[in-house]
Image (tube, rainbow, N blue to C red; front, top):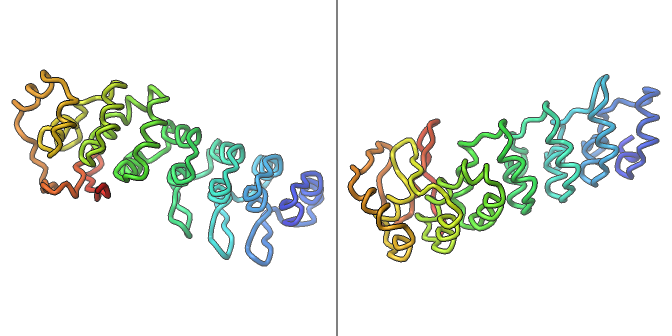
Length: 257
């Protein structure tokens, strides 16, 4: 059945399953199940057949023996968008799980492969671990991509605009800061230790970034008492990004030059 799934022969796969000629999660020599092959090669109809069976559906968390990748991570890597969307709609899948080989979860795969629609869908999903995903914003390689996909979704701008603005300020990405402020990102977004994007701009070394914020905002923020974060030691060389969530303080290395 693995060969039939690999070739996308849905009729053959269906026949083998219905006649109980073979187990639905049977593995070939490399440990690939029919679902892995179908997802890996983008055969959406076969994937749908395998996961939607009322009796003994295919195991969504199976992985091969060579790369230890799941059906979802294979579909992500090979950019089979329709298969990814189909798998993510299944409530039994763990959308925060990392595949054993790359240690990527679905959102990290979406960002790495620049799947904008899938990344937006994941960020909007209530099942996503927001605390873990906020760390992605600290990567200089991801900043512009994340900004573009967030600006397309008002809900995402409201949820993540302030935190992404803070990272852009600390990483001294002036054009990103300008774009986010113009879009209405919350300049006074406050993490659980009291840091805001504006406060980071005031204390930071780039005058150009400070000038992007309005004078009234700067006067307001300058009059405030500096937040005290036991877990945070402000490094004047800007090699730490001060971001925290209610779930705990997060210090992420800023890779910007």
